[in-house]
Image 1 (tube, rainbow, N blue to C red):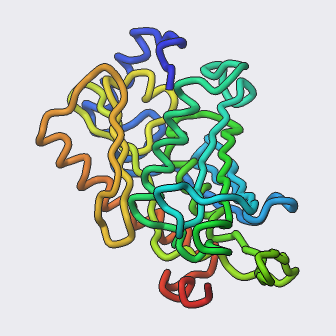
Image 2 (cartoon, helix red, strand yellow):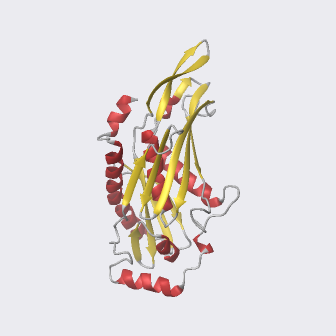
Image 3 (cartoon, rainbow, N blue to C red):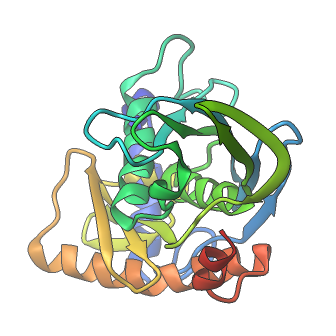
Length: 280
């Protein structure tokens, strides 16, 4: 994100660093601790699936829409997944009106990359007529309030919206597709979460607030599967991470992902992702 557009007074960064040097953060959290996480699903009545996520004061909603379209030429037997993100100035002065910016595109690509690498949705089950017609899955992400760590909140919102999504059943007769009123769960077979670690001087912290992001030298986000595997990585900021810092950040992310998965499962009442796959 374009944190350089907002000036963080050097004295404020000094206060943040002084607190970190004592092993504390300004809001009282430990280095490896998230702010309060709240999840809601089914908040948009006209969407096939939707969710709202709060991480502290950061708030993001995600919605899923479905339409029948053509498959990509290189994947004729898979449905289509498209992720869009819109960073509105209503959420933060960091964001600007106008066509999608680099920040919008980056957020959408990070979320899309993790979902694809983890094979969160079994796209092969979204085929209606092989090679001809498939369901196109649109995942739209809208931050409503940006107080840091947009990616983690957006990833949780996208995942929860997918778990909330129902797909209409169809019949095909002589090439004619009929969409039925009966619906079934979207075939979500693998869960993925996103965990961001910020580096401020020599310190690595989870879930940075906006002030901490502005003070950070760099950030690194990991897409983590339920098996604890890294499926995507995104680094941002002008600073760098030493090899040992990347490994430490990875371990922080894998450990923190367990809390996020637990929160998602509790919200949807899902004990095992395999149960969701069997229903599809």
